[in-house]
Length: 449
Image (cartoon, rainbow, N blue to C red; front, side, top):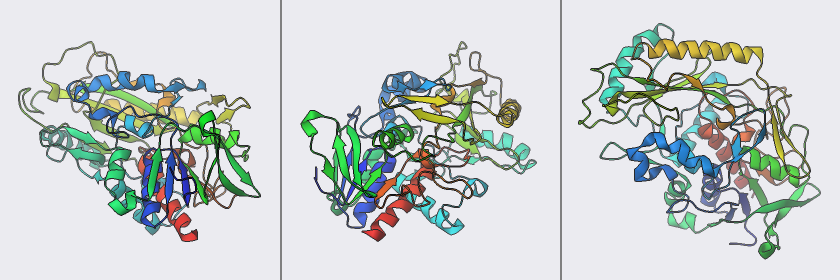
């Protein structure tokens, strides 16, 4: 690995690897370090691409549980992990754009559109991966008029991946992002797993490099610019451990309250069990009146089913995401021993929205079929779903840890790329939005190089 790259990136998830590729396309030399080791082959590819999850998709959540480290506090299920390829190799890969009303003043409307398009290109997003699904077409037919009466729609759910000839899915991950780069770009990127960063070394508002925790790597790595992409919790911890502790660090956290349920579609809505069909992947975008994101798909269900279903095409999940309100008192608190505790309470407005979302899901599911026994709508442990705000970006009237370009305040050459930067409620899966921000940051870094 280069000892003196132009840019040093901490974290090998999709944000870190996509940032490395964007910067290398600008001619910069980039080194990426990752604390974790590989759990897939090739390294950094998606864990879910194994054949066993094609046969038993509902076993996925139980299989990945061992890779997470719990975080203490008020969000049962909150966890962190370090893996080569980042937590994204445990990702569901759904990549819808945030609605215009959910975006904030980090970019102009035109810049947001350009950044989203670039992020979709890096993640190789397919807009309608299950467009040929017979079951999906029947679901849309049942729901589209009901939703249209409420100024809502149901459409294909964008996916970072590809539908295979047999109807299965290849899930993309950092391996795919890097593999798609031109050879000359890849040559400017060096990636090293198993490197635990102890702290950042800085003076007078400039980071000169990182100090490593391993006794075998006691010499710190130097770089002109440092970009932290170690996740919402890991990035905040590294800043705190390094003595970089702006008031907003860890303050104002949010996450998705996640409602899960699985139904058995009415007979006649799907092909017979022996027939081939692409599993449906649909979504109902949030609106200002129905402020939640609904996925209607056959993906994976963690609930303990007690009812056998002889036709797998009849199984369908409702996954609904509600962003909790951003409030300063909700916080990730980090102590001097690097321990982390999450403090959180729902506001009454949050609870009103949760009741409304659950009623909406139960009503919509009623048009399609009964709930599978054991898989009735259930609120999953809250911390598992998209923690944001731990290193929040400035937004109008609410100062954060970074400016609108992701540069840490009071530093000339320290930038962040993490879900933790999102400073406002966004109902959809946040990876695409975070990557749009990260690519905008990379362009600013390259312009200053």
